[in-house]
Structure formats: C-alpha cells, structure tokens
Image 1: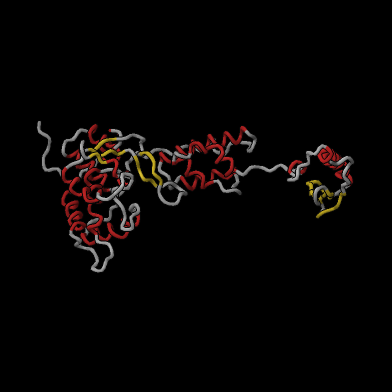
Image 2: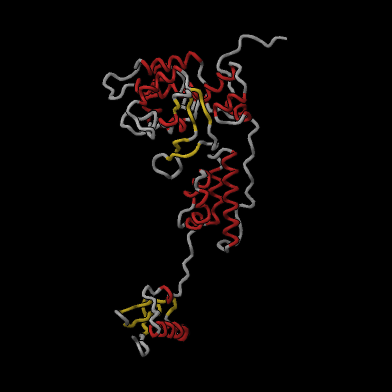
Length: 364
C-alpha cells in the first residue's frame, strides 16, 4: 500500500507536456497541453489527481482518466448507432455506404445531387427523408451547426411512365420457344459441364407463377404442401447492399401468400424434392448452393435469347409476362395482385402491358 505521494516528473515530449513516474511499473502520460509556462501551472491539478488516485488505490492503468482529450465520434459510427434497429429496412442499410469515417457532414448535398440521377423518384425522396431525420439528430447532439438537407427539394415525379425495355413482357410464342430451348438443350454448348435443362424447372416456375426472383430463390422444400396442393410464399433470398451473398428475409411487402400447386408444376418439382431436407432450397445451383441470378442471366438466359433472336430481357420479364397474360385472360386485378404479392394500384401502374395486339374492338 502506498503511504506517500508518488514523484511525478514533467518533461517536454514533442512540444507537449508529458508526465513520467513509477507505480507498479513505469508510466508516461502525454497530455494535450503545449509545453509552456501557463500550461505547466495548469498541469499541477492533473499531477495531484494522479497522486491521490495512487494513494487511494484507484489509479487508472489505462491512463484514460488523465488524458485531456475528447474523441469526437465519426459520422459513420453515429449513423450506425442511430439506425441500428432499422437495418432490416434496405433503405436505411444502403445509406451506410455514404458515411465513411472521414466524411464531411456538410457535403451531403453533393452526394444527393449525384444520386438524384441514379435513384428513382420514390427511392430518392424516401432516402432524403431518412437523411433529413438523421441530420436533425446530429443537430440535436450539436454534431453539426445546421442541417444542409433542409433546402434540398424532393425529386419531382415524372408525368410519363418509363418502361424498362428489358422487362417488357414476352408473347406466348416467345415463352414457348424459350422453355423449349431450356428443356431440350437446343442451344447448350456440346461440352458444357451443366446442361441448360438443369435449369428448366426453375425457368418454368418463373413464368408459371410470376413470383419475384428472390422469392423463388428462397423457396424451401417445407413450403410445398403436397396434401393441400399449395405453395407458401412468405420468404425471399434477397441481396442487401454491402452484404456478401444473400440473406433470407420476409417478402418485399412483408406479407405471405398461398399459390396453387398445379399438376404440371408438381411433375417438375417432385424429383427436385427427393433426398432433400425440409430446410433445403427447392431450386439450387449445380454446386448445391442457391442459383446466382446474375450469373445465370449472363451465362445462360441471355445466350438463349440471342440464339432465338428475341430482344434482350432480364429474368424479371417473367413476372411482367405472367401479370400481363393474366390480365388479358380476364383475371380480376385483385386476383392478379394477390398472386403477384402487390396492390391493384401497383399492378396497373407498373405491370399492365399488352403482349399481343388486339384483333377485336369492344362491342356496343
């Protein structure tokens, strides 16, 4: 037990005041005070504090208590702290990539100006609202002096509906030709390790049900109810920003739906379910993992479309094709919206297309 004051020596270390002393080992504490006469007087209180802590057996061996240094949290740390419980929402999670440790908080307007051309109206305005709330939080803790987002206007909604040509629906004949090419390996390279027919059930399911790609990728064997002839769609294998691989999550709308298990689909998926655990994915890659839609699209789907001389489409065209065909065949919008997992308004706004030119006019 220490019964007398420890001797502490004041030294000049790189123009800063540093304290050296021995107590259960040697210690050097570099303060933030410049080495001058005024600060040599100020540091006396710190010396006394260290000596009293040693006497009371309360010495801080980390030196943290004695360093006159306030560490300002980085904006990336503050954003993670503020939005941590909301990271299940893709919009909140995607904004993490903006805030690097050395990011200047007042330059956020430049980021939004750039993103305005890349994000659609809905994405831009929602993310701007999130950032506005975050910056109001920074203002409340005095991290910033003003909110630079306040005067940035929302992105105006376009009066014309923009149609992605890669998602235009296919005609009935085009779908048949694509499925035929997959089933019979018509355009499969002779020495290909994996035949195109391996993916036939997956592509057939895409066009048959019009589900979102990630919903089919995340469909597990346990979701197939053979007795009731039903398929439960309540999960998706989604790609989240800044996350390696895919993550199992709820559907885009957070709602489950039940689809009928038709005879033609059962005939295709029954062999896929053999020797699989209930937790296994129904559709898988040749290596046993989930199907990578980007790789499949580039290496298999696009080459087949080129061979068939069908304009370039992405896999999502299957969803647009299903919905457009269903509407043409007089299914109600409410029924189509249920099958697709959307609202009737969304069906009309984004998915209603004409796949074949009408040959008859309405009767009077």
